[in-house]
Image 1 (cartoon, helix red, strand yellow):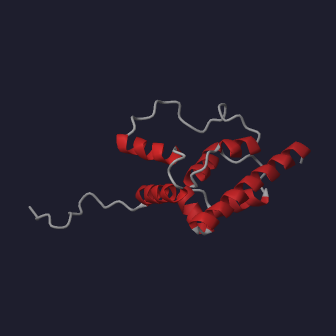
Image 2: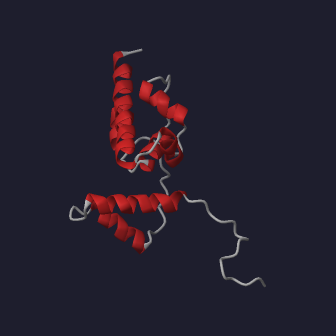
Image 3: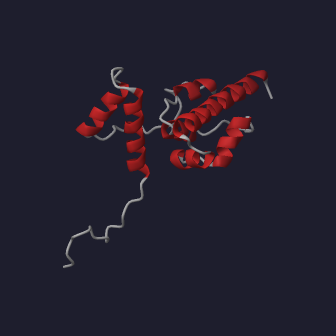
Length: 147
């Protein structure tokens, strides 16, 4: 293994370890919960922490890991020595228009006058809504009469 490849593995492992430590400290998330919220298997995350990978991690998984933890993937890409703009991790199609309420929440998350506690509650509520199970379409709402 080249010195550069080893340095990249160490840098990425450090990034992942810090992200996991932050998730444990601020959200009390276990490794299983991190895996569930990011969509990246525990085995993959453990390999990243150990630097035990033969080929680079998939960009999509790195992005999913970061987004699931509420992190910008740019530092992870930098640790891997990737140029974020050239990495194929997103579709180049135009994203759908954003709901005004979601835009308002995002503005609150970047507003320096909003407390960290409020930002934490906004993120937790968003995560809850994003990962809650959806009801099958045939399930009636309470109080709705059968036809």
